[in-house]
Each structure stands twice: as C-alpha cells, then as structure tokens.
Image (cartoon, rainbow, N blue to C red; front, top):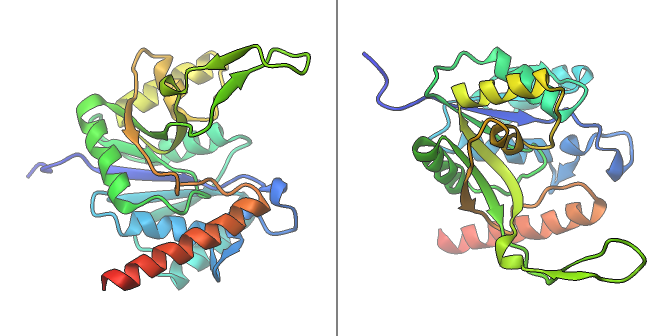
Length: 241
C-alpha cells in the first residue's frame, strides 16, 4: 500500500568547529542549561509528528560521542550519525547521498545550533514545501538598515520591508534538492544555505515567517541569550500545565 503522504527526512549539519566560541568543546556540544545544544535541537525534531527520520552530521572524531548522546537522551528518529565534509554544503550533501528518498519526499535542513525552533514551525515549513517545492523560515529585520560602500559614511537607507533574515529549517522536495546540489558541484559553486542552490535551478523558496527566538548560537552572548530564552519557554510551559 502506498504511503498517504511524502516521507520527511531531516538533515542536521553539526560538523563545524565552533571556533568563535573558543575552548576545546565544539559549540554544538556545549551545555545549554545542562544539556548539549545539539540535543535541544534534535528533541525539536523528535517531537515533531511530521518528521519521519533524522540524519545528523558531525566531525568524524565526534561520531561516537553523538551516538552516546542519542542513546542517553533517547532520540529515536536519528537513523544515521555520519561524518561531515570540509564545508557545510559538503556535509549536507553527504547526508543527502545516504538518504533513500522518493522524488516527492521532503528533505528538511536545519542548523544544529538553532535549538529554539518550535516543532509547529517545522511542520509549517513542511506544509509549505508540499505546495511550493521549496520553503524557508525567515524573519524581517527590526532595525533601520543603511548601506555604506566605504569611507566611513552611510550612502543609502535600505527599505527593510523588502528584506528578510534567513533562518532554518529549510525544506525541499528531494528530487529538486538533489538537482540543485548536482548543479552546484558541477559549477563549483558554494553557498551557506540550500535555498541559494535551489534558486540557481530556477525555483524560488516560499517564505514561512519565523520567530526571533530561533537564534543561531555562534558567540558567548548568543549562549547567554539562549539560556534566557529557554527559561522563558520553560516558565510558559509550566503556566500552561
């Protein structure tokens, strides 16, 4: 009997060195309120009913560590923990090649160090992808944005209503994402997100409005802010129960 819906795979790239946070522990494994950042992230996907399978990509030296954490925190949806490549794009592509997906199945890519994505937002981007083939979570900037071409002075005020700060998750039909990656490698083109690769094969991603809580933890200040966000989330959850 055929499936009633496309299968949804999530790729969580976590193969970065995290050097901006300093220290010997990679940022994805740093504790956030006593739990590794990457586990907070994986739990969002574990609890999302629309996600069927997760592949996590880490440095080769950390494969055993992540497998230990998956067992400790009972993350069951992760089917594979694999070694990443030299760059983020290489890591996502490595995971994509390890997934057995049909053309209409959906691939969701999400940064390991964005632990505050809500499960309902993951579902929203998946629904948008089903309709539009590609969907990306993003928020609009709050501040006035000005442009400077050099010399220490502003040259232009940019209309912020036309601008979006791109986040993850990003979701794509599997066939489309594979085609986009193939073209990128053929052209020796690298990007910091998958939406840019898909745009190069002529497909625009549907915007799904995100949350300002969905921060990417890259600095000590981000880690401190993350602890405050988590406190607020836990307080809200306690009030609702």
